[in-house]
Figure 1 (cartoon, helix red, strand yellow):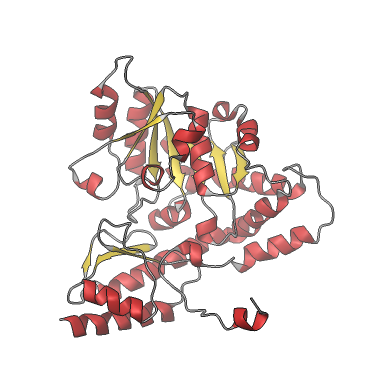
Figure 2 (cartoon, one colour):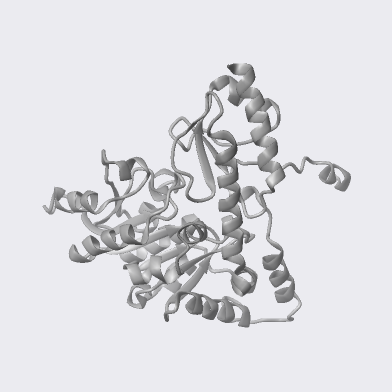
Length: 361
């Protein structure tokens, strides 16, 4: 493809995913700085990896172990594999990302640990969350040797439908987990958005609340690639470096995975990005929730709006060039805002949606 063709490609911002956004300037500058720092030791023994790791320890105010992998599937799968034997199981919500979107990764890397989906009829379950009662039920459901033994509870923060666990909710789940001798894993692909929504210190929603392992997502918040697996219980990370290597997740030029984290963590860029994305979702919600034919499906607590739209309206929006997913929200449309979503983009989409709704009415 020629350069002229590349430069002529459409540049409109979209709402399909926060993965569509580019690299934030601070992360990009750190990559350039790392590239200009000359030869560096390989496989994570470089100064950039050491610096970003120390910055994460400072951020969480604890002496945690930190490992970088390429993507969220690897982060979740390897973290869970480190907590389980093959005959164990992981309790999760029906809409947990590890259940719906990891292509069997947790089971594969754990050599067969089963995901136990905790179905529920209460409001929390409808909002994509686990509850202490659901965990308790799954633990007590069976205890015979023919059933995979529960070993881990996994929660997604923020959830797949854009809701956020409160500090109290995490503490309550951690309490039942500890009482039942289970470890607590947090899938934090959008952890930054949850922290921004709750306006709490990162430690309050993780290790101080009882979380043992966090998969801290950076890609959806402005990094080019790379997630951090953070072990607050360092005993759980024994030999994790070998697990990362075996899974093909050990970057030889690790500094280009870890250096962007320096840019994100300096001056709380990660939190500013998340606050902006959340604010754009609130702006979008305010602009569309009252439109005829639009039904918002879940509270807008992070950086996504989930809405039921008439089929004719969806067709018109697609024809106008807008892209968004329909398969995630159980029949609804997911409208995802990113760190760089412009207010003008939100307003333009809302205007086209309003016009489409008026025509369809």
